Image 1 (cartoon, helix red, strand yellow):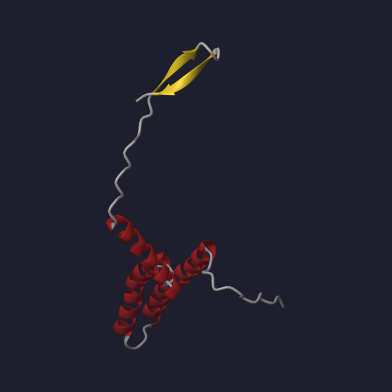
Image 2: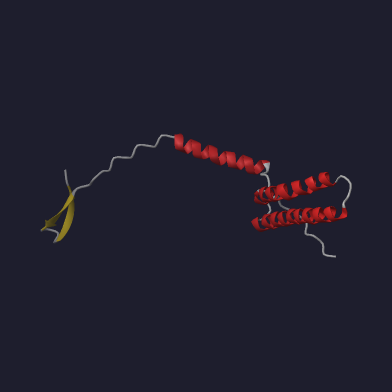
Length: 130
């Protein structure tokens, strides 16, 4: 018998594992729906007592189960307290960032210079403008 590994983290289940469990729930609910259809056919041929009640229950299962299966299959697991707290903190950070006034942009300083030939030195130098 294969042993399951010990869980040492509180990380959420992977997306693939969540999808697989939702697929299994969906298929099992659709199997129950098919069972309702088969059971309804058997009940009609067997002529059991309270037949209208049993047929109504089977019909109700065949109508409601697909709707419930789709809702359950599309639902993700509930968030933990830590995930909800992290989401709230992220929303609070965004709200604060949007409310903070932007700092004024600094005035850009332009430095003007010109190239001057220095006859004594023999090369061109830059002189700052006034």
